[in-house]
Length: 293
Image (cartoon, rainbow, N blue to C red; front, side, top):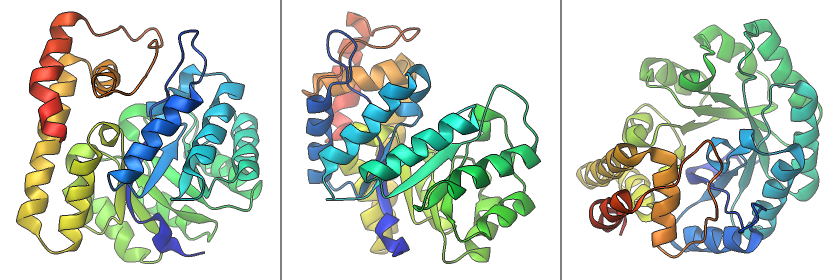
């Protein structure tokens, strides 16, 4: 497999809904088309940003298929299939492969305090069920699982694991991993730390904010690759300002509202998220949207 096809900026897609709460496939395609036009290199479907863990298994499958269909082979699609149940994760992985996803990823099983030995077996069981590669997903701030260098070295030594989605601020660990595994693909996870990830060897990034600011994210990557570090830093600072603004409202509801204001239908937000009120909407219009252009 050509691992370089996975390099670059990947948007962790939001899931649009219609007025009845169903997946709005037409709205998703519109978002994807616009993202590709603005320089996005690929998509990460059915992750946290997609509301995956608030959806039924059938809805998660629908999101994966709708994403693959909308992309139509133009750029790669990574389908996130992680679950608290290995059986469900395998079911989603097989489905993702059957509809044409280029790779899968899986968050570690959360809530229950699984051992590292159990989590490693979870990953091996998933990747053994399909013939497409798997990106391990490390996000200790959400799942509480802290992999050591030795844990990740053990998993990544298996050729079926193509790389790692690395959502951590431990760049010492990421630096060691990129040196140890030069043929693997490492995605930076925290949008506000994209440059930091690139500086220690990440090959790109997967991020939620890129739904709203694809040109800014693409600018970071393009300038960094061209050796224009000062310009890349300017784009990163803009990204950080956007993120700070979104968090001052409430990140995920604000992200969806901002996209609506840009003409993308998002539909009714899933509870327990709360909709953005008029005062905060005005803040998004005046303080956040101008930064995204």
